[in-house]
Amino acid sequence: MAEKTVAAPTNSQGAVTTESTRNRERYITPAVDIYETADGLVVMADLPEVTRDTLDVRVDNNILTIRGMSQHATTGEPVYREFELVNFFRQFELGEKIDQSKISAELKHGVLTLNLPKAQEARPRQVEVNVR
Image 1 (tube, rainbow, N blue to C red):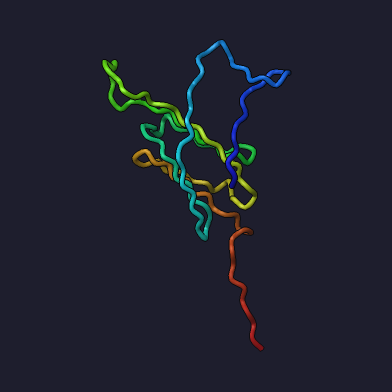
Image 2: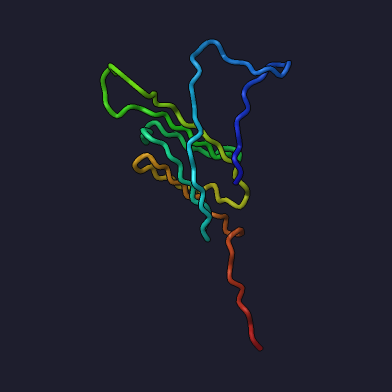
């Protein structure tokens, strides 16, 4: 699995362009830990203040996309704020060794855990030895 970054839109001269009709959203790259197990990969991403309703995890064209929108836990109008919550965005390119139809996700206490199982043909297997 390799990280896939999203290129900024460019015009015909190759200059980076911005859309002027709406506000530009700020995204940061969430910190992730990736572990390999015998069954596949486990990806753990830190997404503080992201809820299930504001989290989008999808796989499209071998690209795993994580997008989370942060929200303050308290309601009301802020009187004083020393930090601003930001949104999260990260993409990974998946190889053919991952069974994309069996990817599962769990969000608990601001940590997203993704289980990416290996495809059956990519899993190690024991070879039986016949003795004669």
